[in-house]
Length: 493
Ligand SMILES: NC(=O)c1ccc[n+]([C@@H]2O[C@H](COP(=O)([O-])OP(=O)(O)OC[C@H]3O[C@@H](n4cnc5c(N)ncnc54)[C@H](O)[C@@H]3O)[C@@H](O)[C@H]2O)c1
Ligand SMILES: O=CCCC(=O)O
Image 1 (tube, rainbow, N blue to C red):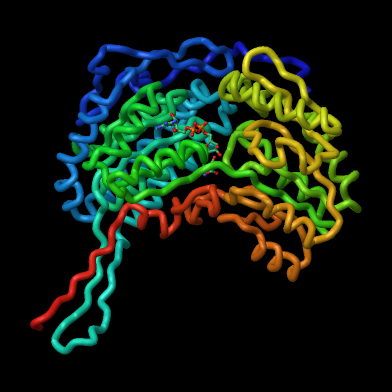
Image 2 (image 1 turned 180 degrees about the horizontal axis):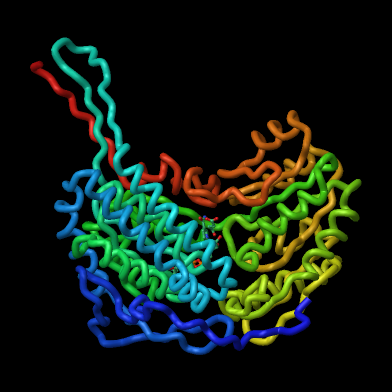
């Protein structure tokens, strides 16, 4: 691994430099913070400044909410076809500019440029999907128990939506929410992660070009997330909060939102179990694990975190995995050789280090990796001999560490897999159809990958159970998160 470790690689030039916006976006204008303050956004591969964005506060947030409120009626009352056309146009612009958007994403997040390109296409798929769904917001006509009357149910947009997103998918976590919100007829105030505001601002720039009316999309940038979050969750003009991020912050936002009883959806942390049963195709299971575990250098909420391997295939699985992981190349996302980029910041690297040190102190063995590099880089790692008392068992690592546990019986592993307060994704490999149904039914998660490590797609409902939150994004269900049902009892007919 890391025969050459390139972190300082020249950043490709943007074809369209206007996509790298350094102002926030409120009511159709590129604006500075009222205070005039800014903060620096750093490239996680080099820790060098990429640029500055406004450091916004409660006053700026109020203004963005006001703009979203004032534009709401007009937007909600447009035809679904009109909203479809704008979303479709936006989708085309995102695809046309995918290379530049990927460069911006790699710059601020660090993921390898090809993976960033993959995220841009994945992100765009939600805009395309919800452009189509905009025209399928159907209601019901229900037989009434009363003569000469009808029961009608229609769906209406909730109102202004506050959207708070993380840094690990700076593009797709925004589009997955925005596609649904805008299709439904909501207007939005987005607060992207302070680490990755540029992808959000580039999306806003393309939305301007697509022709979205002013005030429909607003983006505020800030490092003062607590203060701005408090305003978004307590301002009575915000009717919906859609949040993706950690469970602790999700709980806080839910608590705050209760003061005005906002509709909420929370996509929170995971601690995904991955099970390789003894009848699995071991090679395929290892490939699936790598796809799940090491995507975005292990920084996805659906990354496998606890890897349970049945005793009889444990040694073969571990050795094959170690072999493949040792072929990874860590470095700048702009180096075409790089398979895995940096972690987002030094805090993330500290966490990975702490998890590995704890596991090793309690008896785990490092098969490959385990090395902290300069900057925010950490070598992809395989640990064997994991046990229940280790931190990794109970806490998502959010880094490139594959932690292998040995098990014997199906009942035992299902119990272990479900022994978590969160339940986002779970994966397993088996070729026994009966076992597949049984385990898929038994796993306490919102999403199950059977003989696959990749489950994310715009067509499927993304979301969790337990303390991984509630609500679903993508699929035919995603738009409902931004709609209210209205029942009309229509008499006198
Ligand atoms: N379930 C999902 O779909 C999903 C997707 C991506 C990430 N995640 C989870 O997100 C976490 C990693 O992302 P993160 O570190 O950015 O999470 P985080 O919770 O620290 O931050 C997420 C967002 O919330 C903001 N935030 C933080 N504190 C806030 C506050 N007090 N008020 C308002 N906003 C606040 C941040 O600025 C950021 O925009 C992991 O736990 C991961 O599993 C979940
Ligand atoms: O990190 C969580 C989201 C990842 C995904 O959508 O697959």
